[in-house]
Image (tube, rainbow, N blue to C red; front, side, top):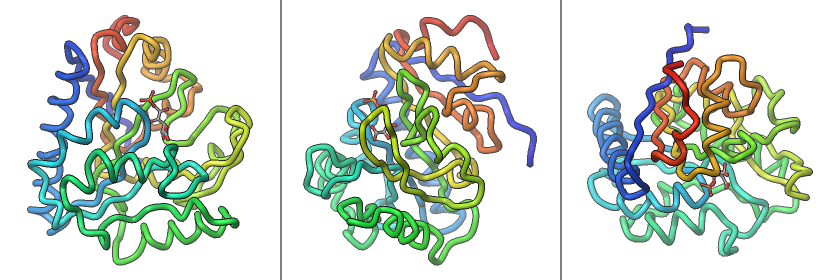
Length: 240
Ligand code: 6PG
């Protein structure tokens, strides 16, 4: 495996500046992917921080040449208020008129979530070759989770499948998530981290010895950029 690079850290003054900086970089990555390969394959993240970003992406991305995936999904119907797909549809996909055929949601309403995960992997792999994603957008939880790679769960041990269903006792339910092989194989990974509540987790994952789930991506083979606000950057002590 290629040597892990040091993650880029972009600290913005506040959430509005964080959104602006992240959106500008996403537009650049999209344009470069389309120029190089004729299409842009992106995995969107769930959560309130990514949610704040999405309206800014309605402009400046060639959505007609973009394939949209999701880094994870809750085990709910697509019209459920908890659905990451619904959140992205309302904040971005409908506004940008992204063709439905270009939006690949997890069938998270299925009774058999393991089959849904296998189906999603087939979708991710279809007509493509590594890197399966040009860009993976990720959030960071206070416990150091990202996507639905939560501490102490079986998904952390997955070394070959790109997508799995996973029991998350901390949430009292199941989730669907891309795995380390999928995320570490992305052309680029952008973390979005805002608020003082994330400061401890962000400082932790930046240390090479961190055992938090997001750390394996921060220090992994994919190029990582961490876009954060000052509050989230509060505990970052030195360049790492
Ligand atoms: C989800 C995401 C999850 C999220 C982080 C950060 O489905 O919620 O996959 O990983 O990105 O928990 O969420 P916040 O930005 O809301 O703190």
